[in-house]
Length: 321
Ligand SMILES: NC(=O)c1ccc[n+]([C@@H]2O[C@H](COP(=O)([O-])OP(=O)(O)OC[C@H]3O[C@@H](n4cnc5c(N)ncnc54)[C@H](O)[C@@H]3O)[C@@H](O)[C@H]2O)c1
Image (cartoon, rainbow, N blue to C red):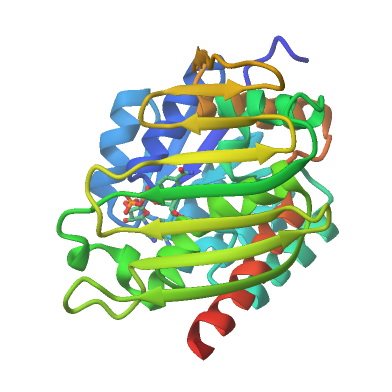
């Protein structure tokens, strides 16, 4: 069975859909169809892949024989698309965030439990090679007892006013939801379950109706304290995760494409570059393995849902602040 190429359909044919296409191809899977409400976009990627193009995903899944589906639309359509794909009993790889809200996320989780098929959430940083190395350094005790976690994900997005990212109806929130979902998942992945979160937010870009900048402070079940900084308004920013332990420290530096660490008794820093394949190719390799075996992926629905719950708490805190 593993020799048979998995046949995949992709819903939404924008930026991340192309990344999924390349990652499926790198894993010898066949993308047979794309659906996008903007048919021209579906056609563009379909031509690149030698696939078929549709304007409506229901029509696509009625016409095509597929083994699995990627959902690559903005968050406002994740629930309806996921419910439809699950009603057909097909495995899902759904882009982050799982949905716009905890309630929508719970509806998806209910439907997925009933369908009993693999459901992966696109929290792709769990597959980033230097993040995996950092997890090894923590779990092996090489840093001693982990004490503090610090993460900044930030950039400046030109013409952000024109993008759906800042439309609350489509995105479900601002930078805390869009980018913070990765940060919160990384904190959970590396430091354990979140036990509390407080947040502050700001709108620094004129005309925006959602937060473009935020800071979060969290604690984990292991007693690790984390800080997360997010912004869409700062060019040339650091993009990094640092974990400080009782015996050493390590930084995943996305800009320098490396991890550097200093362990107990060492004066020198060790630097290791990122290793291939990239995080999306690894993410989709894991999904395809679950499609073949019927196993439940990690990160799965519980991770997608828990991140939404923490984000909801962060918004309550940020609004009160
Ligand atoms: N994992 C990551 O690192 C990462 C990176 C970028 C985006 N994303 C996520 O991927 C999703 C898509 O983001 P993007 O940057 O590719 O957006 P995009 O705007 O480039 O593409 C989205 C596409 O979906 C289409 N679409 C909208 N509603 C639809 C519907 N109901 N049916 C079919 N098609 C529909 C749009 O026409 C558009 O072509 C978002 O949830 C985003 O958060 C994840």
